[in-house]
Length: 110
Image (cartoon, rainbow, N blue to C red):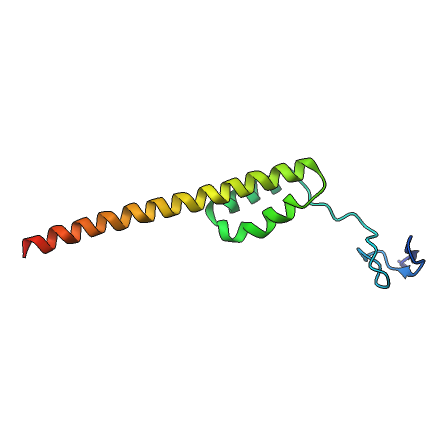
């Protein structure tokens, strides 16, 4: 199967079918918008809540898309990231206070 060369609409340079942008002028020749299928959303939301540090970059990528649906997915992911981080801080602080009070109790027994 031969690859049919195409021309860049900007500089008329020959580009291959796999190029996203023209190697000569840099003009974008393919749309690389992110998909907003239910599986992708579920994965991003799961990642945002349970592994928030790994979801920051994908959430920002969705926020930067021109599609309003992609922007909504990005906003929800950012909200889940912030919620997850705040809950982590709250529960860590609660655990440390609990451990500190138990240590104070055991120190008082001696």
